Image 1 (cartoon, rainbow, N blue to C red):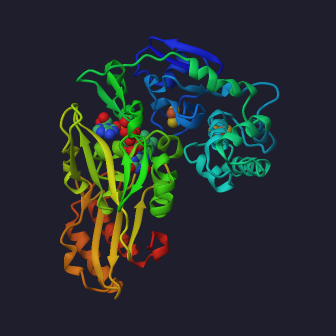
Image 2: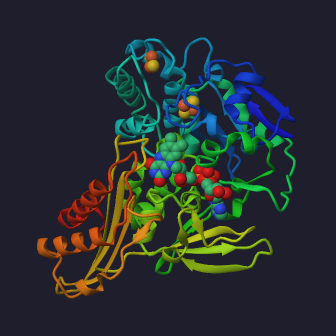
Image 3: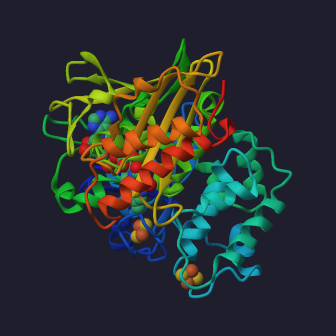
Length: 466
Ligand SMILES: Cc1cc2nc3c(=O)[nH]c(=O)nc-3n(C[C@H](O)[C@H](O)[C@H](O)COP(=O)(O)OP(=O)(O)OC[C@H]3O[C@@H](n4cnc5c(N)ncnc54)[C@H](O)[C@@H]3O)c2cc1C
Ligand code: FES
Ligand code: FES
């Protein structure tokens, strides 16, 4: 049984936990404002808000793609579709869309309204740049993005005086008509909602964000027993401890990006992860899902490889072992994870003094696209400016995310153009790409070499210098 609040209605349903929310909203609840198009997280037509209870009793809302979101994972949550925002008068976002002619056929409009509303409720800063980022998962085929951006700009201007502190902000947003009055009662209603614990059997499929799983095998997951990583509240933390960042296995990519320790110690990583999928997906997708999916072009996997991350792996009995990420990938889609094990923590060493990090990704589209080739570099230099450490990771050039070995030969050299060129050639020699839809093997080799040169040419400020 899954229980949640859909707009203003309490739902308790026996539908299978693996049924995607989009299916439930349109097919069971008969609400047709949430649109169905790609069913693969690519277009944003199915965007809804998911409000989850927080430890302090408040509700935190995030925009998510309902086509990849199983209903079992929204147990105890408040789900908002466009019908939950309809009323007299229209909400502020809806009015600004109308005033700025930001809707033509209207197919994408419910998704855009929900994404912008999610931005108002959850974005750390109510800036125009963040509003545009919040729309990175919503595709519009007819209006044109200029008028949609104009509506976003007008929204930020109207909210310029709003306190961004979460508690103050919520009340202010209700007063400003961004969300209807009934939202005020939702925290109490969620607190009273009965949800049942769901013990998971040995064969249950572990679902983190579901953004790989529900693209790869939705029909099979509908029939399967599922176990949700979001239930592991103990694995939802990011903290700096000693010389490392410790990241719980259930942390989403967006929470990781926005967390204070990452903003402080790895601002470049926080920025680069904006190139991972879209806000709608990053709000659910996890770093651990990216690692375990073991795609050779996983962005988080490549970044974490270069940062020399380690994985804490937990078995069913609670026993733990630690594995360097560089030893985790055993072959194409094969990992060092036994049945019943999960990644409970990622440990990322802080950058030592004199080290810097840089990431490059080439894909057909700037957002919502996986890479043809991606690469990350951690470069350490001594007081004399000579190289003391190189960790170079590359994706799309082999069956697994690749950590390029043998670069110790360059220690002691200055990281100048000549050294960069020699390292680029070493990387090209180590790469074993294949021809595929993203490019020929020859193109990917050439691209990797060029991106390695960019790593060295980029100013230190593009990554972090400490
Ligand atoms: C439209 C679209 C765009 C995308 N764009 C990008 C992109 O730009 N860059 C990119 O790298 N990826 C991209 N992806 C892929 C996907 O979003 C990422 O790989 C994501 O990080 C997967 O995380 P998840 O939590 O959703 O994983 P899930 O789908 O929940 O899980 C993936 C696998 O990992 C396992 N798993 C998850 N967490 C754990 C854990 N803690 N311990 C053990 N096993 C675990 C699951 O059982 C499953 O086998 C995209 C996907 C879509 C649909
Ligand atoms: S239907 Fe396209 S993102 Fe869900
Ligand atoms: S208004 Fe037609 S797709 Fe956006």
